[in-house]
Length: 340
Image (cartoon, rainbow, N blue to C red):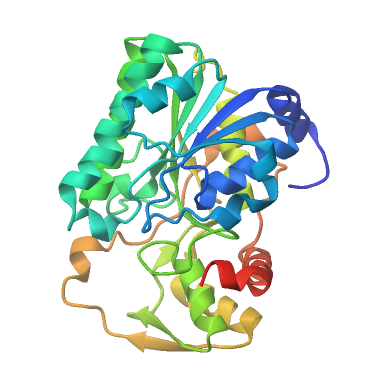
């Protein structure tokens, strides 16, 4: 974040001494959120299961482990979650099965985590903490193929994977519990996040981070087609800022759904070239599209963030891709052993 301004003052004043629960708080986005909440002097509880494929990492919380309350609790654990949600002010729910490719191989597990788990959380909040502010992290993948660029929140939703179907279903749960039970729910459709503390073990998600690893190991980076497809890459600090600002919203606020991106589309080719230039290693290899790529390819994407801009202000400057990749590279040069 930049020099303290009106937005940061608002966030600091709200979260100071506020009791916050981050579900999935040992993972990529969750752990960065935990660090920022502590910097804002919030009281932070963290729940995570450390599923081996979902990106949780003890090193993400090593520096702050003495300052948080940690619970090894699954989102689907009714008793455990009931104890955690009581008496908290803000709940950031980042728990998920996180791979859209895996969702097609483990559809029932994806359904159980990404739907039933969230429905149970909402029901527990309705019964035991109906005043909490609840933020749910969804995905830009709920839109499916982009029909217009930039994509606003009213764009049609036509998911192309079970992961995206279940994320969209989760959104509907949060809407229902706001509409019928007056819970203060919000949901955010995240673009393509990258940055420090993301998993680097596989390429199922976190494509920018994975390519940074490939470059750091001086390996080939495969780009399908001509590499002109556009994505909206958002640096994790900017993503956290958006989550924090949305968490402040009162239940009377009209908008419940927000895109979290930068509003800038960057081609795969430019993203890869930037990584190779900054890391000073790696090679870009152009590959033909696989036969089934049309089933999953969503086309170009850049987020319309006009709703978010109303909250954060037009003067807020998002981290440019080059700076974000440089910061990410520096982090993994220092902490490589904990992530590779």
